[in-house]
Image (tube, rainbow, N blue to C red; front, top):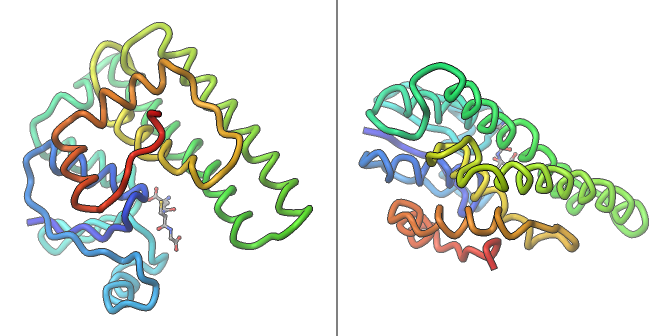
Length: 207
Ligand SMILES: N[C@@H](CCC(=O)N[C@@H](CS)C(=O)NCC(=O)O)C(=O)O
């Protein structure tokens, strides 16, 4: 039995969708309120107090990429090719989402929280330029294949779709049409719809 510490719409949503996709039942713990008992409980098992944090039968797994790989290895699925160049490509895009695109948005959130006025504007302009370059790269890639890693849906598509929905916190993020087509396909999955409903999140990035 799984327990997932999550915040509505955060990167933990990719794990939530994945668990649904894999047909696994999960106890969800919302740590969106920083003063809640749930957040204190999370701090006890994750010193960074971040989501996603997954508890798998008493074993705590932190870091989204580690959680995704753990679940994909454990349950039968087609969300990560088994071997070869296809697997390498799917992993590359998963890590791009987790370790390049996610931190780029995180810098934007950091600027919104910690800077004001002209300084905030400068940091945000710079950050949004970077985010837009990343989305351009995604768009170019999707001109060649229907999914980010090729012909089949992989976990990378799910994580990209989750991250894109943070764009409404910022002004000036540009996402191409092929990329939005991908988001529409991903959010149409019953597993994604269920997660949106449970977390009470509206999907805005495909519009
Ligand atoms: N490297 C971590 C980053 C996780 C992360 O930044 N999570 C955010 C939400 S998307 C979070 O928990 N933010 C609250 C905080 O850092 O206190 C991972 O991939 O799991």
